[in-house]
Image 1 (tube, rainbow over the protein chains, first blue to last red):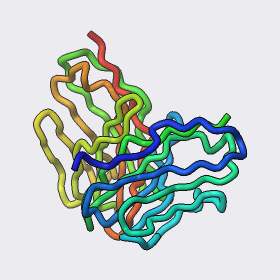
Image 2 (image 1 turned 180 degrees about the horizontal axis):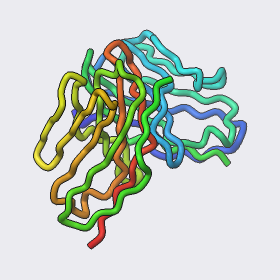
Image 3 (image 1 turned 135 degrees about the vertical axis):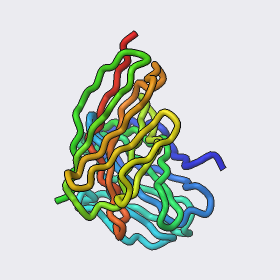
Length: 112
Length: 111
């Protein structure tokens, strides 16, 4: 396994469109995390899954954002009715229980 | 709330040691991390230290933790051009899932 993968790596969309990102964690990592990183800032936590259960959501995750991990393996993050303020790098990480989080390369979203 | 602070920029001469400093506010932070991010890339975990340790050394990297002052530092010995990147200090509590990151320190290397 080569690590956490994310798709697409880049996405340009027009304001008001919906976008969906995918994250494939490291095999057998039961924990999966989504973070958002804006320019010049560190990553900020969005949400966390243990297997298929979404156990924690940040207040940053507005109603327009939804994340799923239906079979406890890959995860999707959907943003509805995108706004310019959603432009950021969306990072996914995975970890086994009680261990370090390993990050993927990220999906860079640009909303025009 | 929880906060992690670090200086924004550091410039060092190639071959010198780099020292990146960080402070955190939550004394219950159990895990303290250093991540490296190169342009356009995700985060690479460099090293981490448990809060019950004072120091950890890993090849060219030395982490020092002053738990009383809630101060963490990363020393990179013999800094090379390949060390140019943004370095993030981060903290996590034992019971928490999320990592709290600082804003990153951009390390640039002078010839």
